Length: 270
Image 1: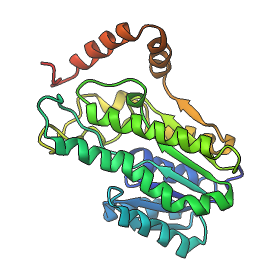
Image 2: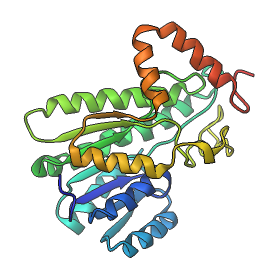
Image 3: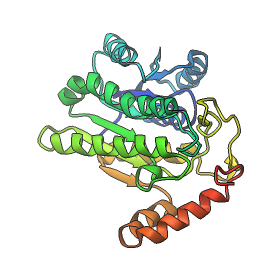
């Protein structure tokens, strides 16, 4: 796909991978619709996109709300008349043992990570089909292998993966491109905003964020996925290794994942 003048809708565009995607697609000559709950941060991202000569619309949107997702697509069409690419990036994490947490934590994570993807994809679908465009889901290694202490997050990403895979197969004959990318741990504020057992932000990341994969690396890979119309991409050697080993040595990988999570700062296993 030649991305020049293509209309790209990006959810969760106020920071992290979403923000990096905004700049990456702007550099390819795309027109942008940026969505997130924090309109002030969105405006700052927009201003940078304008310096890259990208026509940009910002829309305040909580993807857990169906009406907000419908409004996002409506405003996109009113501004640009069509949608070529939808990036379902908005997401939230959590960190607590299932035995300890309030079930509202799981519901909130599922509403944002899974239902947000469903809502936005549903309302964008007529335009994406017309353009034979692309819809991408930002999943995670946690959607390939369950992460202890992050049951809700893993569940939401497994659900997204299944939804996107079924959607891809449904559209084998329509020309719609459906892709899923699974980054490893990526530098962003997702861990700071992750919910604890009481559905409150944990505020502090358990990792040294400076040593994690840059969001810009993920964004560049996503642009290439759209250009090449790739279906699936697992990033990092660790992620690819886990995916492969889990097919043959699942019990050993269970133990390995448990030990790694137990070593985290303020691990729920301690």
